Image (cartoon, rainbow, N blue to C red):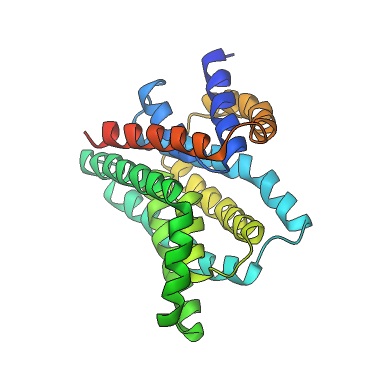
Length: 255
C-alpha cells in the first residue's frame, strides 16, 4: 500500500469537501510533482479519480432534485463529442513530445483559469446578471452546447475544467439558477464527461490503476471530514488558500 498516495487522496478529498472544487486542479499537478507521473498518465489517472469521486455527489444531488437535466443534456451534446474527437486525435497522431507539451500547457492554463473562477465567484455572478440583457433566451441552447464543447476539449487535454470552470460557464448562461441546482447540474455533467475522457486515456495506457486505488482509499474519509470542517472555517480563508495553491501550481506547470 502506498501510504503517501492514501494521504494525498485524503488531503485533496478534504479540500474538495471544504470548497466543492479543487479535485482535478490539485490532483493532476500533485501526480506530476510528487509521484513523478508524466503529464498524460497524471491526467488520465485524475480523470478516473474525478469520475469515481463525483458519482456519489451526483447521485445525492439527483435524489434531492438538484439537477437541471435540460442544461446537463445540452452541455453533454457538446462535451462528449468534443472529448471523443480530442482523444481520437491523440490516438491518430500518437502521444508525441508535441502532445506532451500541449497537455502540460493546457494544464497550466486550466489551473490559472480555475483560480480566477474561485477567487472572483461573486463578481462573476454580477457580470452574468448584466450580460442577460444581451443574451436572448433562444440563443442559450446553442451557447450551452458550445460551452460543453469547450469543456470537453479542456477536460480531455488537462483533466481540469469540469468543476469550477464548468460551474462558471453555467452561471454566465443561467444566472437565475439556484446555487444548489447549479452545483448539482455541474456535477451531473462532470461525471459522464470525465468518465468518457478517462476511458479514452485508458485506451492510450494513461492510467496508473494501483495509484488510483490508493488515492481513492484516502479521498473517501477526506471528503467527509472536509465537509464537516467547512462549517468551522471562514469561506474566504479556504478559497484564498485554494487560489494560492492553484496559481502556484499553474505557474510551475507552465514553466
